Image (cartoon, rainbow, N blue to C red; front, side):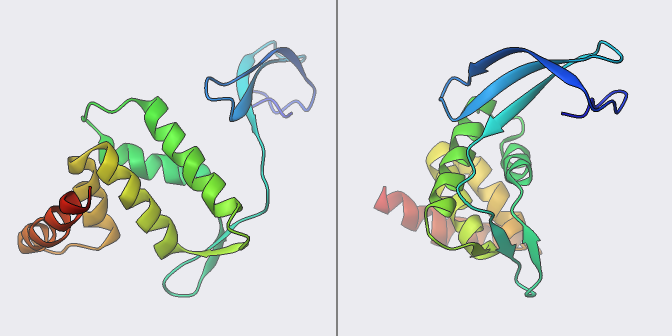
Amino acid sequence: MKCPFCGHEDTQVKDSRPTEDNSAIRRRRMCLNCGARFTTFERVQLRELTVVKKNGQREPFDRDKLIRSMQVACRKRNVELDRIERIANSIVRRLESSGESEVPVSTVGEMVMDSLLQLDQVAYVRFASVYKNFREAKDFTDFVRRDVSRLEDEL
């Protein structure tokens, strides 16, 4: 593992342990060149996932981008990072076990929206405003009237 501080290619694992939800191995490492310490995570990856965007462009699935987008939606809400991590793990597992290596961005977006609705309705609306490209305040009110009240009835 390459040191993120000095770029040296030789690091030593000092400690390994599973994460709380057993979805990854957390490793504390030390650079043998500069002595810096850092943490890495090792996760099982069933298959390489590619996200197909609306314009047809393809890019590798990025779990960190998924987490960042949910963190932005949950900013200043009473939502723990651990819950966001568990949701991301669940979404990744479902995508990997779907049998498809190419996933439409709409599938990922709908999975995130479903999860955020269960987690926090404000985060759900925030995410939807970006995902569905709201242009004006009327878009928010229409969405809340139509989608949130319909989905609350289903819950």
